Every structure is written in C-alpha cells, then in structure tokens.
Image 1 (cartoon, rainbow, N blue to C red):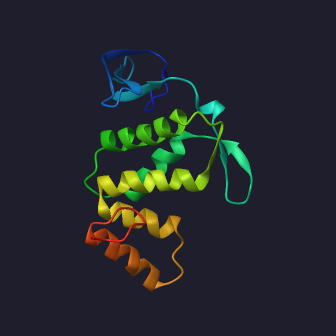
Image 2 (tube, rainbow, N blue to C red):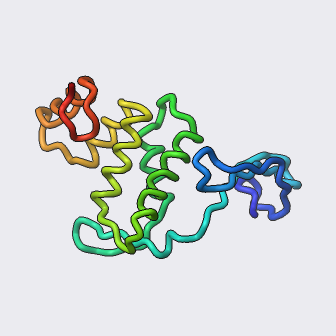
Length: 159
C-alpha cells in the first residue's frame, strides 16, 4: 500500500475491523516514512461484473468510487461523517450486487443514492436531486423541496 502523503510503500496496520454493514474491512495504517495515518478499505471483488447502462445507451463498468464521490459532493460542508458516506456507498453497492444482474440502469443507481441521502441529510439530498433530476424551473425545485419538508421520501408526496 502506498502512502497517500509521501507515496512510500512501507506502512503498518494499526487497527483492522469490519465496517458497520460488514461489506468491507477498514484498516487504519501509518506510514513508516512520514508517520502520517490513513484509512484503507478492503472489499470483495465484484464491481467488474457489474455494468452501468447510461441514459444515452452507453455501457461502462460500475465504479463504486463514483457513488462515493457523488455522496461527498452533495454532503460538502454538511455535518455528515466520512464513515456515514462510506456506509451509504457500501449499501448502494450491496443492493446492486444482491440483485444478481450484470447490468443496471444509471437511473436506478441515482434513485438508490437519493434514498441514502434522504436518510443522511436533507440539504444534501436536495442538492443531489437538483442536479440529478435536472429541474427545469424553480417550480419543480419547490415541489421537491416541499416533499422533503413534508416528510415524504425521495420522489414521494409529503405527509
């Protein structure tokens, strides 16, 4: 494992444990050269078998890092921990793998991400939804905002 700070390849594992959802092993490491600490995650291979069908019909390999990146962007400057984001990305990935299908529509992935964000942080959810759903005007945005305020789930009417 290469240190993300100094790129040295000599480190040691300080702590190793399963993630809360048991889909990965979290390893806390320290670089033997610069002394900085960092975290790595070990997962079962399987992403290669999963392919994503994009809106325009293109097909590409599934990349869990894109899910995590989208979650991180939506939650930027919000009180959501990196562990919560990792767990949400793991849940999305696990749900997709558990279907047993080789191809998944990008829309389905977006819906799963929105569902996770709705549970984590409503502001992050609205941020993601505004980009993902490509609201055409302020009225569409306000309808979604009212759903969130009213307690409805992603894409569902409020209470």
